[in-house]
Image 1 (cartoon, rainbow, N blue to C red):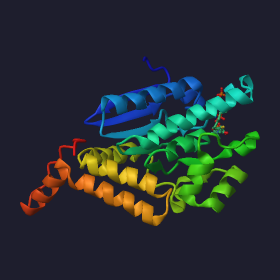
Image 2 (cartoon, rainbow, N blue to C red; image 1 turned 30 degrees about the horizontal axis):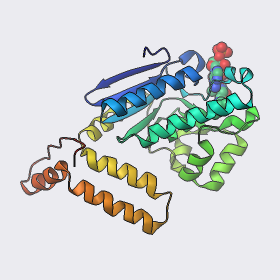
Image 3 (tube, rainbow, N blue to C red; image 1 turned 45 degrees about the vertical axis):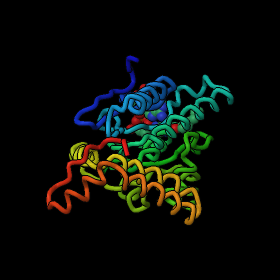
Image 4 (cartoon, rainbow, N blue to C red; image 1 turned 90 degrees about the vertical axis):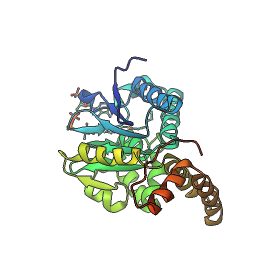
Length: 263
Ligand code: CO8
C-alpha cells in the first residue's frame, strides 16, 4: 500500500509511524485510519520491528482528533462504523506484542489523545496539550477515550475531562499519570528514540509478557491477575534471553539478548 497520510520507517529495529497531515493538524480521516491499520498489520505479520514509536508531523500537533470535516457527510450508522474502525485499530496497537511509545509533540485531542492512550506509554513535549473536547461538538469520545482515560487517571478525573472538554498541559497530564515523561520540544524525539532503541535490545519474550500481563491483569481481580503473571513468568523464564540474562550476570558481563520470540 502506498501511504498518503502517514510516514513509516524502520531503523535499528525501531519502527516510527508519523501521522502526516500537518495542514489539518494530523486529523484522522478514514483513509488515514486505514493506513495506520496497514502499518500495524505489517509490523505484526512481518515481524518488522521490536519497538514502535507513533508521532505527528510538524511542530504543532500529534493528532488533533478525528477529521471533523468528515462529520457532516456521515449519518449515525456511518459514524458508528467510523468509531468502531478506530476502536478496532487502537486495540490492534494496544495488543501489538512489542512496546509502543506515543511521542506527543503537540495537540493530542479527541482521537489523538485516544491514539496516544492506546500506546504503552506517552512521552510528551512541554508544549503538548491533551484533552477530550468532543463534548464541545455535542458528541462523546468514540475511539475508546472514555474507557482508557478512566482506567489511566481514574473515573472522576476522566469524567471531569470529558464533561468539561478542556485541554490540559503536558505537565498536568504527567501529574495525572497520563504522561510518563515530559521533555523540551527539541529533545523529545531524540530522548524517545534513545528509550526505544534501549527497549529494542531488551529481552523480547519478557517485554511481551510484561505488556500482556499488565494489559490483561488490570481488567481482572488480583488473584486472577497474579495467576496470569505466574504463567507468563514461567514462559519468560524458559526463553533463550532468560538463560543469557542469568549467565551474563554470573559471568559479570553485559547480556547479549537475541530478542527472539521463541521460548
Ligand atoms: N478535524 C479537521 N480539521 C482540523 C481538526 C480536526 N480535528 N483540527 C484542526 N483542524 C484544521 C483546522 O480546521 C484548520 O484548517 P484551516 O487552516 O483549513 O482552517 C487547521 O487544522 C489549523 O487549525 P486551527 O486554525 O484551528 O489552529 P489553532 O491553532 O487555532 O487551534 C486547535 C488548534 C485548538 C487544535 C483547534 O484546531 C481545534 O480545536 N481542533 C479541533 C479539536 C477537536 O475538537 N478534536 C476532537 C475531534 S472529534 C474526535 O476526535 C472524536 C473521535 C471519535 C470519532 C468517531 C467518528 C465519528
